[in-house]
Amino acid sequence: MPIDAAKALSAAPRTDTIAWTAKDVQLYHLGIGAGVPATDPGELRYTLESRLHVLPSFATVAGAGLPGVIRALSVPGVEVDLAQVLHGGQSLVVHRTVPARGNATATARVTAVYDKGTAALLVLRTEAADADGPLWTDEARIFVRGEGGWGGDRGPSARTRGEAPAGEPDRTVERRTREDQALLYRLSGDDNPLHADPAFARAAGFDRPVLHGLCTYGMTLKAVVDTLLDGDVTRVRSYATRFARVVYPGETLRIRMWRQGSGGVRVAVTAVERGEAPVLADTAVELS
Image 1: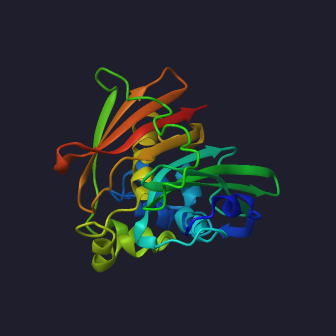
Image 2 (image 1 turned 135 degrees about the vertical axis):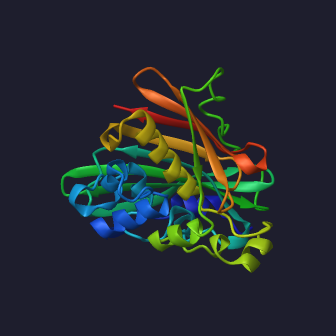
Image 3 (image 1 turned 90 degrees about the vertical axis):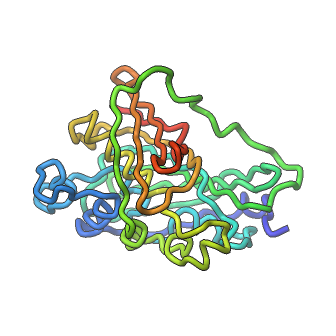
């Protein structure tokens, strides 16, 4: 069996030293659609080094090392075809405001391997800390199609936060992705050919290259921060989502937001051009 769950779970954690600069933050922000309009003060806080605020989701690419999906496939006991791999979900807990430049130690390990029947699900946890202590903890959930069915633990339901709230959302915004969005976003470190190579995308079962789930993830958090938090990135304490379907570059995201008192926001994201197909589901932002 290509996935040896026991071996993957018992593997020693992988520790890397990561570093980033303001230019890395700016490139990430541009990759998730910041900077339009270019002279808008609200956008300049993401693009101009003299007033730079770091969107917490930058943590998922900080250091420009291997993305979580690829790191999980580098663990002993995991030997699979990259074309069968999909990013199933992402969660992030921010322990302190992410600085615009820094150095940190990132320690990653597989914390769970679940048997979903038609697929295996790997959970990769990464903890980052600098000289002052913990910075963030993130978890990537990675599906490997065709690798389930060994009789293992199915794990918890993906719908841990339940359905989106009933009733009209407090705010709805639309964000159109660029046709070259994936080509720009991949410069922050995720060069999986699924997002750029048409032949590879077809081999993986898609008509054309798809947008990185983490790009949609970042675009959505930016919309929440800009729309409901007046641009205050420091209020985000955690952010989690399930990637329900892929987004194709050029599509329009409809982002619906429901306030949950003063402590959080529930979000649902759909692709407008595909009949409101859900692309991010089970999504929540917790606030300070």
